[in-house]
Structure formats: structure tokens, C-alpha cells
Image (tube, rainbow, N blue to C red; front, side):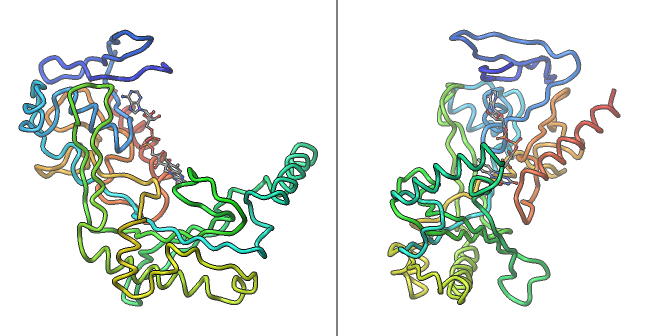
Length: 319
Ligand SMILES: Cc1cc2nc3c(=O)[nH]c(=O)nc-3n(C[C@H](O)[C@H](O)[C@H](O)COP(=O)(O)OP(=O)(O)OC[C@H]3O[C@@H](n4cnc5c(N)ncnc54)[C@H](O)[C@@H]3O)c2cc1C
């Protein structure tokens, strides 16, 4: 059902029997024939569970929500790939995407070429190159990832920046820091509180300082410097470790891979079992990025599809 927001899971004697949802200005409900599958993502699946009375009992009571099942791990262990972007611009970079008269002409030509021949600049996925690196030779597998973008990317592309250039992201693939999702209020239509707690563990910040230096070494290679760009001042001014740490704290952000907030496992802080069933509740599974016990060392979309396909097998086997 589109245009509907689930406000809570309907529970009878600790069994999920359906959902309540908000649509067209009114509350409705729907009964499940077999079981309820919650797939609201790592930021919102914990919210729906908590609104349904499944979560940290003390937290729910403070908000006046009846506790159906005290499950403290709901919303905990949130993590992501903390990321920082360096932007390079310059007059010699006019072939990249950007805002200028020449850029607008190229874009118009690109639209024409795409419509007529399905080729040209509009075939880009923007993040045209990437890389996986080890922060040190001692690492068994890469723990840093680069995304290279053929445009000036500031504030996730929400800020309009004039001119042409390129951007390079670097992120930590296995951060130690863990954040949390909590409810801001019992109002199901209000956003939850999201605390990513990036760099709460000092090791993450140290590793990120090294990562920024490695990224700069790559950007300083002749293949790129021959194009004549200059790193924007907000990051270029950070040269000492202390300055780089401050730049990271000011500018680091998500690369959109939140996971872990309904962690799979068998411990007291885990939310779902190996069949993705919510501990202590019948007829309820969580099927999304929130169940990852530990983030994958790469982009999360394909692994989430894999989780969903595995869930299909589990559900069929249970019928
Ligand atoms: C901007 C961006 C770029 C990304 N780029 C990449 C990439 O290039 N490669 C890659 O691998 N991954 C990428 N990702 C990550 C990838 O999209 C996610 O890991 C993946 O979509 C997570 O799947 P999910 O099912 O857990 O959650 P989601 O895809 O977030 O799905 C959750 C759905 O539940 C809905 N929902 C939430 N709450 C409710 C409610 N109460 N009632 C009804 N519906 C609700 C949401 O609207 C949403 O449709 C990107 C993410 C973003 C945000």
C-alpha cells in the first residue's frame, strides 16, 4: 500500500497479528494472514518496534508507551561508514559536471545525445571510480573505501556550487563506534532521534586522519594534478593531524549505509534470531539492513537484497 505510514505493529499476547497505519489523514489497520515482516530500514524499523512496545522498557515508559516486551537492543548498535569528502575545483576541469554557461551547453548537448543515441555524458553514474584500500599493511582485508565523483559535491549535493571540479570520498569500512536510535516522542508521525556517534571510539578518528592523508596522496598523482585543480579551502587548510581531526569532526557524515539497529544474534542485546524473528515475539520478522550484526565492507544495497532473498527461503520453509 503506497502513501501509508505504519504507526505500530498490532500485538495480541506477544504475537504480531497485523499493523496499524496512517493514510489519508486517518488511522487504519490490517490483519496478517501468516506473519508480519518489518522492513522500514535501519533508521525506522527500531522506531516501529518501539512504538509497538518492543524496546528498552525504561525508555518506552518514560514516553508513556506500554511495554509489551523489554528488549533493550532495539535501536542500539547503529553504525554506518563514516565518510568525509574532499572537493577539487579549477578552470581546467570544465569536462566534469558543474554549473557554468559552458556546463549548461554541454548538459543540453548531453540531453540531446542521450535522447537520440543513448550515449554521452548522461550515461554516467556520477560516482565513476572507487577503490578499496588497507589503512596499513597489517590489515588482512581493505578497511577504507573511496568513491570518486565527477562533480563538486558539497553537503550531499544539497548546496549549489558554481564551477567545475571533482570530489573524492573516503570512508571507514569497519568503524568501532556504535550509535543508537531512540524515540523523540510517542507520536508515530514524528521523526526518531538518530545518534550516529561517529568517532565515539578514538581509534576511528585516528584511522580517518590516516585515510584523509592517503586520499590526498592519490589526488596528488600526475593523472589528476595535470588537470590543474585546487582542493577547496575547507579541507585544504587542514594540514596537521589536529587540523585534519577538526576538519573530519566538522564535515564527516554518512555515506548512507546505516545498519545494525535490530541486530541479529542470540545475546541479551540482540533483537532478531538467525531466522530474523524478533526475540520474545511470535509472528514478527525484521528484514532489512538493521539486522546486520556488523556492517559489510562495501556498499549495502546488494547485501540487503541478499538478506531479503534469504528471508524468502526462511518464510517458505516455515510454512
Ligand atoms: C542517497 C543514498 C544513496 C545510496 N547509494 C547506494 C549505492 O550506490 N550502493 C549501495 O549499495 N547502497 C546505496 N545506498 C544504501 C542502500 O540504499 C541501503 O543500504 C538499502 O536501501 C537499505 O535497504 P533497507 O530495506 O534496509 O531500507 P530502505 O531501502 O530504507 O527501505 C525502507 C523502506 O521503508 C519505508 N518506511 C519506513 N518507515 C515506514 C513506516 N513507518 N511505514 C511505512 N513505510 C515505512 C521507507 O519509506 C522505505 O521505503 C544508498 C542510500 C542512500 C540513502
